[in-house]
Image (cartoon, rainbow, N blue to C red; front, side, top):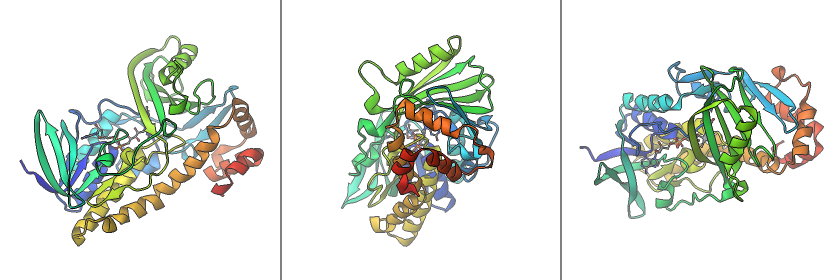
Length: 393
Ligand code: FAD
């Protein structure tokens, strides 16, 4: 078995598969390792993505699209409903995916591009020599062995250990993580053309409930609350049960998912000599929505390209890999920083303030508005919000 590559990518989620595909298409020898025996399973995701951004990376395929939504309906605590068209509703509204199939399709794309894929292969540590990451130690079916690489791409998700092994601080405090619980349900009878969001401190403290259509009468019904709001005997799943028992007492649970989403905003560094971190491992998910699929793919693509540039120059030091740091911060990093400001403001809002926001948007014609127009209308009607978010303008 070959044990030396240009690039080894750890983790076959969206970030890892796109990084592997990009590097392989450039002609590098690439190995993609995944600790699970089935890529994409179990799912820990509500599976919503923006169509426009997704199409930048892969042609939509009916095998992994469950629903093609027109927009979203957002409910404030007093039941005021705001309806938004898909184009302005944000990065998680557009398609609802079947991630078990989607993640496998991305890994297939990487393999088609020439990357080797090894499942049930867990990274257990990095090989570091002379202050450079030179490879990875892995375990596969009870056997341990080393794999050498010029560059390692750490794409091992929210529970990432790769960053820590490399000496990068990826630690998350409870306030930096959204704890989530989700049911795949039948019998909610929602309009399958819409994603639904419910706001309110009673319903989901410092978070929200989502309902995303999955086709055939099914839906992902989930909740995310800030980690520092979980406790005192009430966790995300308890809030979810309250919501479901109230709204859909007769619906049936077909699957349970629990997981965390980093909402910390950008971390200080995502590279060391010979290594780049991408996706949730690099805390690149959106702090306000918790969406991370698209950012993971964007970062994976940049990392794959930078790996090629660095290896071509024969320089894999942080000086060369800094191109990755700069490019992701200039693109998705900006969005993440802005979202963090919005999150820090919104999570302080009382139910009364959320209701007042909803009221100020009643009657607004969203179909002809850009997101910026929408924010402007919102802020004009809410002086406090306008003041708190002034740095965004
Ligand atoms: P992951 O998809 O987590 O992939 C990491 C991979 O690395 C996994 O396959 C894992 O098994 C593997 N791995 C880990 N450790 C090792 C190791 N040591 N060796 C080998 N392999 C390893 N985002 C959206 O955009 N839209 C949503 O609607 C949405 N809903 C969400 C709902 C919930 C409940 C949760 C928890 C998250 C949600 N997210 C959503 C976030 C989204 O799932 C992540 O941001 C996205 O999956 C990040 O992709 P990734 O490739 O960085 O990491």
